Image (cartoon, rainbow, N blue to C red; front, side):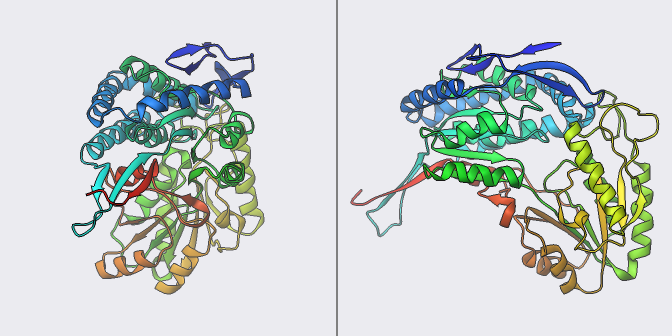
Amino acid sequence: MLEKKKFYIDGKWVDPHRDNDFEVINPSNEECFAKISLGSKEDVDKAVQTAKKAFASWKDVPKDEKINLLEKLLTIYKKKFNLMSEAISTEMGAPIDWAKDVQTASGQTHIEDFILRLKNFSFDKQFDKKSNNHICYEPVGVCALITPWNWPINQIALKVIPALATGCTLILKPSEISPLSGMVFAEMIDEAKFPKGVFNLINGDGAGVGTQLSSHPDVDMISFTGSTRAGRLISKNAADTIKKVCLELGGKGGNIVFADAYPNAVRDGIRNVMSNSGQSCDAPTRMLVEKSIYKKAVDEAVDEANKIKVDLASKKGDHIGPVVSKIQYDKIIKLIKSGIKEGATLAAGGPELPPGLNKGYFIKPTIFTDVTNEMTIAKEEIFGPVLSIIPFDTEDEAIKIVNDTSYGLGNYLQTEDKEKAKRVAKKLRSGCVYINGNSADAGTPFGGYKQSGNGREGGVWGLEEFLEVKTVTGWN
């Protein structure tokens, strides 16, 4: 049993103001493997005041010194790569190979890219050649960063690195369900010897520490990744002090498969949805298939889903692990049952445990066909390995169905007609559109339309989220 009850405040590990133990569960076996403490208002106040004090000097540290510290952090991250992977695999159920190759690798990629962007970023520039106006980019101030359990280090890197790079100070609250990766990251920060108070970490839940941070008068900005429901609450809490708020929230991505799609488009779409056990906010969980190839696509989808193995996160190999918690498991099973009740055809998977697994939060890759966009499974974010297949006749109908959602994070389309791909991509209302399985490059902006959030993470856009813009006249 790991004891991880301390918080990282003012450059050292400190005891919480009062004991409030929380058990961290291994979703592969439903057993507690670590204990943390959930923070109190006193802990939050201490961390915020520490960050506020540190901001006075950190904001003026030259860019080159910040780059040196970030490069040192990158070296340490690479050294502790396997330690990070093991933490992620155990706490949120990512198979160990996936944890290494995708989860932990994403954190390294973001650190590398932000260092590159920072080197080329100018915090001061003349408005234009004919003007005596000067534009200054200045750090927002004290930032509260609240990260999720499904992509823990990915989101930590997307928030912490640009905050530090731009001269902000911060309090990180990782998800209490998957907190150990955040604590490993804090150890790296400590080893890199960032100035005291610049980075602080408090564990806690949303109702406690999350609420206290989002409403704290001395916090200047909230950056949150999580559910749309929680994003609404954070926005309301932040409103009284007019904080800057950056939200990356839920999604219900559509994947349009046209009749002229490349041969493996359907199978690739299934693998995309089921990866990370379906726990990705931009997963293409609605597959729209042109009617002329509908039956063939369904047969391929079912065959591919049935090939996907489900097993323990600790095992090496190509499989999916459990979902993260009992709460998530129960929610997903309830939604699978609602799909059956509302008349969708259960073509693969279902609510029963996978064969050979009688313990852990494991869910079979599940496919529903004959789905309409009005069904609960087509509207709600399930956040599990569940896909709905919806037929369509025309290009305009497909676009209308995809856009008929309160979300707008990531959408997908498959066609070998390049002009059609560009035309459809422009009409889809989402922050990202992925054509023919192509992934986004490092440094491109990530974020959503509508109730999928506001603001952007990654690259120059990620740096700018943590900056205020000042106009100074009469500069020259």
